[in-house]
Length: 528
Image 1: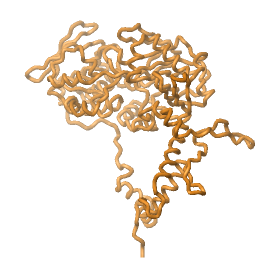
Image 2 (image 1 turned 120 degrees about the vertical axis):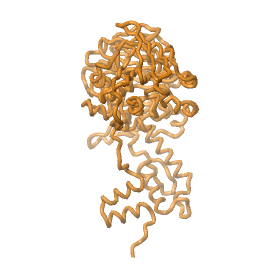
Image 3 (image 1 turned 135 degrees about the horizontal axis):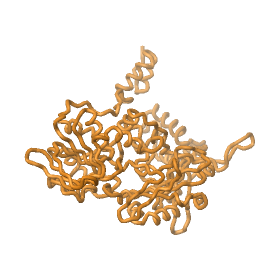
Image 4 (image 1 turned 60 degrees about the vertical axis):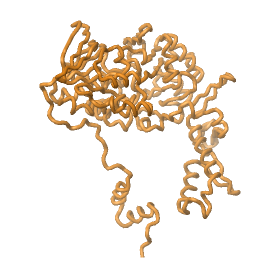
């Protein structure tokens, strides 16, 4: 007589024995694991386009470009207005000879070596972001891996009271940290008692889990302890027969907690869903996506055209007034208008919008983000520290150091992002003139990498503060629970003949995926 399965594992084992692995996988899917359908990222199917209607999209960022491209491809009468000569919005890669203009600060001319570039905006693409990947594939754009997570990268804590720097590897905090937590869990719970809260078969599984994943082992005195086995790294490398190496001394729980070693990266960036591996960037610069889109819609694109005023007519049409660099003052009427801009970029415009909508726009505060980068003549992070790609984190105002994920071991050096700062640190750094901002970031980064003193090409320093960029004024919108509840659905629903688009009109703010999904949501409405 066959034994009734007591656990899911028993059930799966019996199914595999009797029916084989294929049926087992099918059962796993039915139980809720392994999704059977994967979003391709392609735009939704929509009905016929009304080709007699005029559509104006304002803002040639990712959302505006995608919406215009998809509408034009379907035969719509669509124009895309862009206030500057530069398409792409916040998707910008800065190269030799290009100028960065910030309101209230001197212009910068990029002096990176030819072939070098700074992804000043989006730095990476998540494997979850199927719509971005759809267009990369559609336009045959080459992807390369982006190592958000590098266990060899550094976690740095500056202790001002002692004027001391504490630097450990990411792997030390990760594996020593989980080992210490596992040790506490094993000691505190009656998990392994016969009458404990966990069934016997799961209790044994827990024992294996603590042993295999946390390096927590039960001693002869039945005391559970963390016994580091090398995951935390080696202070002296292993080698030949007489070189067994020396492990890094495990961090104690007191060190990890007392120094807040995890806190330099409070969101645990490599662990959040949109930054988990695998991640990608585009060969040659992430602006390859916006350039590919723009190449397809040249006849619809109107650069150097600034929207000044928008008025709704009783018949549902919308009058737009703008300033064109070549034509001067212009005026046109559209059947549909999409404002594909950041809320902060609309502050100086005379927009005929519902009162509550205007209140919502005013209630969404600007955010701050700064990058500072420079070319290093030697890849000292690789040569001296064996760091190949990834991000180091610090509690100093520069917050993050990004290492290049390409051209490993290049004897000509590489670009080091010495600061990627947001929130109050981004605000503070953004107030400094670019030359002072760069100097500050260099001094901060030197506390972590003193090699910068000798290896930095000073002329190559380049920085951007997105809150200072004209017609953008903010790197992203951060929806708080209260603001989301109050405004989100009002902002994301079309208001008659007018609608908003952008990453801030999605559940993926600050990501290109959010911008594209926002554009997708308006396709059917815009084409009516």
